[in-house]
Length: 456
Image 1 (cartoon, one colour):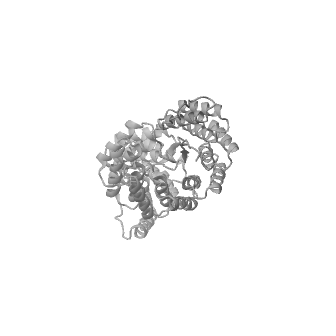
Image 2: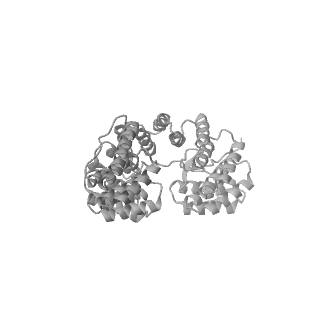
Image 3: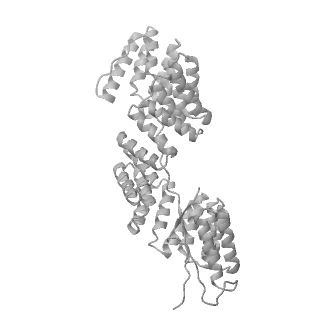
């Protein structure tokens, strides 16, 4: 996990002017401080290796310099050297067990190392020293969020914001937690609060769009993704989510363009290949759709929905044997996938293998007795075998299921079996792979600039 560095206090250029006749020397107490402040400045510039060297010089002169050990840990964390960073935080805390920022940063690196329970203990130690340490409350919320304990994460983020309402990341992550428990309106309010703090906070714009989309407000969601892209034109998640919003608005050509942009930036993203296939299928471009599903499957061979939708595209192209192989693969991965059983029945009917088709429809109906199309197409297959009494029962069940699910009686498709291929299109929940949140729940390390002080 890449760690984001935050300055607890503003960092300015520091010039330490010695008194008349005073010179910097290794026995001058300001000398380790100068190395330390140089390390802080280098860290702010992202020059972490040089920063570490500066902190090492400070520590060599003053081995008990707790702040230098702490900030060396931050620089090591930024380079992905988590175990070394942890050793630095531990040394800082040996020197000063009441140094709350080091407890916080120790929690940050432990979380990055996948040691969430220990991270939580570190955050609690920081809060025992300073109960009003807003950043720690926010980071503690991130641990609970990663565990799926959203109610506890909500409590932590609310504590952080009660102490300091200017932490935009806490507003964003409170919004994410509320979204996770289905409180979409409240999550939007949180993203709005984050945007009051920082109107060009791309993460909050993206996540607000997701919440709006979940409420069916796709035009507003589209506006949010476009705001994100004004700020960060190469924001992959916002481009991807924009494609989803355009798809829901029926603008499939533009959706395909969005997915193409995503795949230029990240060609190894299976959901973009999958959703591109969905949009192409809705445009009637089934050959291209099948190729897109192949792209998703090449990257993720267990992508059930891609196998299923690949089968639909191939079936519409008349390639029923290949379609059947796709459905069989989907069902190897997930035998409880009713749409794949149903679509397998469609392909078998198109091949004239009616009894096998009936068996597939039966499996679909065991999993979802309200699947109207399966009752209807089972009736068609039974009619093709001359079993008209049983077929009539199936059509009646289709009509009953239609009344239950739609409130009205759908038209029964009594055409020849091959006409049922058109019923192979998936239901809406399976059409699109969902939008992606921008993750801003990474813990925040604190980098503190120590100012030289003179005694009164």
